[in-house]
Length: 158
Length: 158
Length: 158
Image (cartoon, helix red, strand yellow):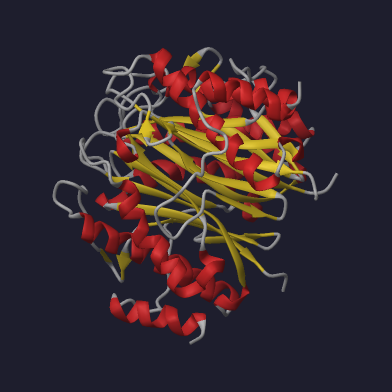
């Protein structure tokens, strides 16, 4: 199956509409492509108008749901590249993702949460999607989200 | 008006001296230019020797003051590029900024705080200044600052 | 002394085995080299199977020990470049490091902690190792580490 098809499968699983416009409310953009590198703004697990799995991981959000939240953030990032480039086939590497997990004071499994995003990148992009990663626990995230992730994708010259 | 003139206007508003030396106290630098990309160290809203609007956003610092803090961080970043390059006209894109907001436990408007920086970049650079952005809430920042922001600028080949 | 020799000296000081395999437990990698830029995943101060100096800085971990933790994270990053490239002589710049310090509510000396990493980079690489830096205080880190740091290295074309 093509990468675009694999993305569609994951989108279906989370009832995420790939044709939905991803808006931002300010003087910034969801994607900037700079010399064949696509920078993606920090993504929270929003599906339509709803932020899924909002809350504090290790407190009101389980690690399983936090992993789902991370998966949705990765899905959104790929959806943004798809919109920007017309196809995910242009991605040739994923140099870095940074995963912020809203954590209870004693929650230390940020890496296990981040796996939710890493697994989506691998499922869709295969070896090309295997990236470097930094996972940290933070006090708060926009809209009370449990997870926020930003991404850097390398694109083939077009 | 030129970009440099627009920056001077914003500097005047915050009583920020653009000729002031921006020192760092360690084995690092405020700016590294790598192959026409200028990386800027995390900036807190320091004006002269004073960190403006220090405190916890949502607690002792209002969202309006936090937005001003973010504006000063952006002003400092542009001042650093101006010093390094001699002119802001060399900036051709702003691929990414990362905005850390020292947040009270229930403060979730990190994006609205980050707008203070995004608006300065847009005011000075226009469409070229429209960037990707990640905004997170953190427990603490150096010197008790309310906001810290790092930046990546793309420069024209010189 | 060569860079590789300087790294070995620091490794000896922390009883860190440079030949040890640095494993990751998921669909990500410790290093991705993208067009002569080496991105390093967030490093915690692990030596063998032990995370050194785990805890909250300003509470159960002193600033001196936190600085040692930051030094070990930098040592690990250089060990990863050495493994990947065969020699540290290929490094031509260090555009950025981001330092996350697990901080007690009133701890504001994140920069002084980060100096532990900056000093290692300078000791091994000299002026080439002088980088931009962002230091923030966070609520939690994976495995309860006191410090986590990610790195971007520029490599000479090989």
